[in-house]
Structures are given as C-alpha cells and as structure tokens.
Length: 191
Image 1 (cartoon, one colour):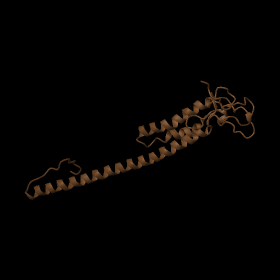
Image 2: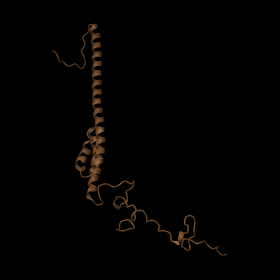
Image 3: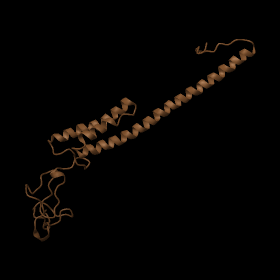
Image 4: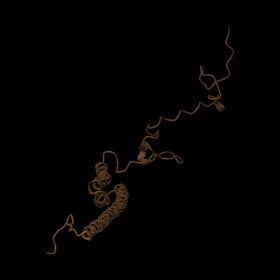
C-alpha cells in the first residue's frame, strides 16, 4: 500500500497542515513562539522597539496577585526596615488593643507613621489605615467602658434603693408589733 500524497505543509516535511497549523502565507516560515513567562526580554540591553510596551516594575514580574512590591529594589535594606515598621503598625495595634481592652491600640500605628512614614510612602499609607481603624476601636471601647460603668453604677443604685425600701418596710412592721429591729449592713455614723 502506498501513502497518498500530502498537501504542501509549513516547511516541515513530517508535519501535516491542520486548522491549528495552517500552511504559511507567501512561503515564509511561521514566526517563532513567544518566549516563556519570566524570561529575559529579547532585546538584551537595548530598548524595546517603538510601539512595544516595556515590562512594568523595572523589568521585574509583578508578584502573585499583580500588585507591586514596596520598599525599593531587591537587596535594599529599606525593604526589610519597611516590613518591620509595617509589622509594628499592624501587630502593635492589635497587641495594644489586647493589653488595654481596646483603648490603646492606636499608639503603635502612630509611632510607625511618625517614625518611618516620612521615608516610606507605603509604610505611611499602611500605618494611617491601622491608625484610623484602631482610633475607631478605641472610641467604641471607651464609650462601652463608660456605659458599662454607668450601667453598673445604675444597677448598684437601684439595688441600694430596693434594699432601703425592703429593710425599711421590715423595720416598720417590727415597730408596729412593738419590737425593735437592727438593720443589716449598718454602720454607726451618728451616735
């Protein structure tokens, strides 16, 4: 059996043509495939040709999620220092809120904003976010603490009033029967 003749291919003798591999137009070979993701630019140290886009972030690929890294270039000591101040702003705010019952969580973000914020816009932005959040939490906590003390004060006042009424009625009933009565919890103020 003989093989039927093949139609002209894309210049490769053993690759047949298909809808995914059409024959080249005009007899030119097909263009090379694009370089793999993350490979160096094909232009070397030369600028890219007119009309092409230069890679973002100074030639570096954006990190996962597409957001740029802050804090300078790789190997720059400022990046590590920024990370430290970011941790101070966020974890310090959480620790301050935990220790103080929610009222002093704003101190660590304020320190981070004032200390590193002028040198690093990213630290300032994150510290301001943490500071605003911790200030809201502190205001809510102070209001709740004051209301709880007010509620406790009101409850103690109501309890004292009820005790005064109950023991006054008991003492009056004893006096109506001709008996004397010693009040409980009595402190001698007047002799």
